Image (cartoon, rainbow, N blue to C red; front, side, top):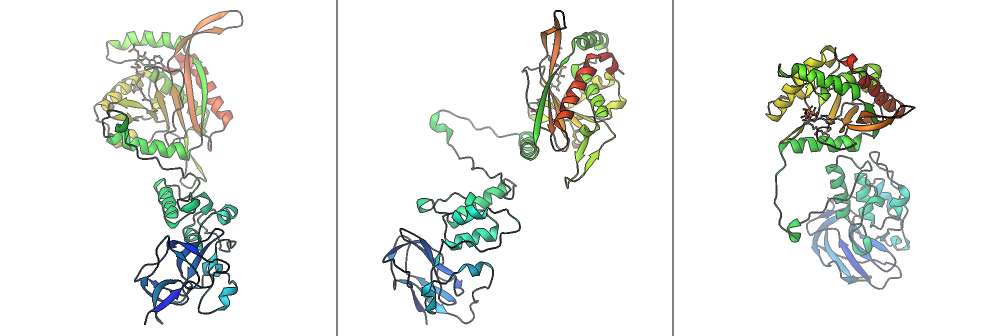
Amino acid sequence: MAKEIVIPDIGDFDSVEVIEVLVEAGDTVAAEDSLISVESDKATMEIPAPEAGVVTEIKVEVGDQVSQGSLILLLEPSDAAPAAPVTQEATTTTPTPAASKPAAPAPQSVAQPPQHRPSPTAKIDEVSFSRAYASPSVRKFARELGVDLGRVSGSGRKGRVIKDDVKSFVKQALAQGTGGSGLAVAPMPEIDFSQWGDVETQKLSKINKLTGKFLHRNWVTIPHVTQFDQADITELDALRKSMAAEYKDKGIKITMLAFLIKAVVAGLRELPRFNASLDASGESLILKNYFNIGIAVDTPDGLVVPVVRDADSKTLVDIAAELGEISQKARDKKLKPADMQGGCMTISSLGGIGGTQFTPIVNAPEVAILGVSRHKMTPVWNGKTFEPRLMLPLSLSYDHRVVDGADGARFTSFMGRVLADANGLVK
Ligand code: CAO
């Protein structure tokens, strides 16, 4: 026989609005499970089941006005139905005077201070959690998922946080792979741009999608610092031009990049923490005794980073010849995955295109990347007069967990010194 479940004594309120129906016909409920939420001007309350059973029919809808005695639903009492679980959560039901009537358990006021133990998987700000405008069942749900309610925006009436808000918050945190670690940001809205004019949709290439994913991960997980500097390459450029003329007939283009690779190798030798990776636990540094330099290559399909292996054991001319081959291979889509693995540090050279400085993104698991911009003939004060010097802008981004600011500045200063003495880079 189904029992009629009615609104119990809810204190001084004559009429309250049903703002949430928490069960459906067919649901099995335990004693004390919340059935509906009601809201007055002053408080939000949940009406609990007086006993265990199966809900056979719902008699209220969201928006209905109810008062003591109003029929909520029909419940088939069931001895087999589970009893109210005696968990930490269940202890939040604080008896009110009405609770002394066994047939009609008291509503739970949301104003109760939380007595749950915070989820071990999430940091919950108890103050903002307790201030969040949400019903006890939503609080309980948030606790179970380790969600800090204070950070969830409410879409319910008057900004009340409802269950769906908690679900969206969790989905967003999972999608961002942050596990609720504080990086949850508002989702990007879906916008129909055609409302403002003609548009065309272009699919991202496979490379675009892959690099986008890695760049995003590296940008949000690595604390970046970019050190800007300038290197005097007046003599280097003269040497490069004379070598370029010499090797032109042999089909080898002696590029600035070849000099930069040799200079980076020297920098890695001088400051070995740049030639390192953090291990997966983040507890140790793995220092490398090999010198593989990655080169960012712009292709029609997107950015790829082939690696010049063992650059320390190759001459400048060897490296220049290899660079010609790998950048061609990159543009012909002939690079194999192994050609792009094992790099120690990457160089991103935009000098041939333009720009004065930029902030390259570290190519993890490497800990630094050297950005190079367009060189410029610049008046430089030599103590007596201004001299025209060819200055090369360097932008060194590094992982600040591994490299200190002082070493960042030391690295670019060192690069400045070795690039100024280009003859030492030829062997
Ligand atoms: N300043 C001024 N001019 C420069 C220069 C610099 N720093 N570096 C190169 N140049 C000039 C060269 O002198 C050359 O001019 P000429 O054709 O008149 O001889 C021209 O630019 C092309 O240079 P290059 O043949 O030496 O090629 P490169 O080493 O500059 O670039 C490569 C090779 C593969 C790095 C380049 O083609 C490339 O793809 N760059 C883009 C990398 C990129 O996208 N990085 C972004 C990653 S982070 O988002």
